[in-house]
Amino acid sequence: MTDTPERIQTSEGKSRLIKHFEKSSINNHNEAWTNLWETNNDDMWDRGKPSPALINLIEQRPDILSPITADGRRKKVLIPGCGKGYDVVMLALHGFNATGLEISAKGVATAERYAREEFPSPQSYNFGSSTSRPEKGSVSFIQGDFFADSGEKFDVIYDYTFLCALHPSMRARWAGRMADLLVSGGMLVCLEFPLFKDPRLTGPPWPLQGVYWDLLAEGGDGIVYPPKAGVEDQRDPRTGQFDRMLYVKPEISYESGKGSDMLSVYVRK
Ligand SMILES: C[S@@+](CC[C@H](N)C(=O)[O-])C[C@H]1O[C@@H](n2cnc3c(N)ncnc32)[C@H](O)[C@@H]1O
Image 1: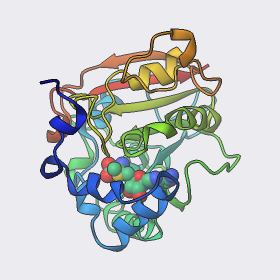
Image 2: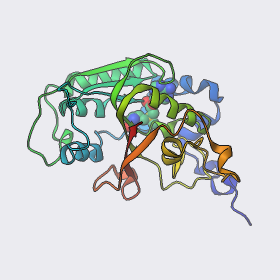
Image 3: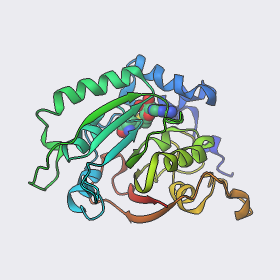
């Protein structure tokens, strides 16, 4: 018997998150996320600490990701779908001016509370093996929709479990918005997750094997499964606006993606 998505992902095998989104139309996904925050279900994705892979990149590869621009200005970083704000605080502790964006007002309030406590006396999990402590940058949070045009530009954007939170039909818009939000030469840093998940399965988290590359470098629509017949059919004017400058398996990452997460850095053309 062939393995159809229905056969490999039975109702019992579906997570609470998938079942929650199955009840909502794609146009109402913002409300569906907000509802999860309002009903205290944010434990479904919370990792409890900043990204060890991102900390290592900042501390070990300042040649790639430093907090200061060539003309001496502190870099502006955006973290869309920032959740409780762990990475926002960690980036500011490493010298960036970091902004977290959340669709949920309660999510923003939770992140602001975390930042108030964490920023003045940070726990050790914010740092890797480096003993140097740069001058701190700033922390801020905005409540809003990633897809709503703000006109603001950033030097760096970090995506972790944001693309995989979006319905596949939103992927080309995600890539176009990332390109709009970055200055020319700006960097999109992605901790790619989940790469281990069978592409036939549904989400969130939606499986992303090959998706970042297709969207950011190849100019595809990010729908890599089922495979399409003609490459030309996949071209989308909003995508393919980046060059990939780094693609590595991080030495350390969260338990949930250990051994399969990839860290990529894409540069806005
Ligand atoms: C899977 S969670 C990941 C949270 C965070 N990156 C983390 O690692 O804890 C996705 C987050 O994106 C937020 N979100 C979803 N759609 C959004 C949108 N259109 N604009 C801004 N935030 C959004 C949700 O509220 C949720 O907190």
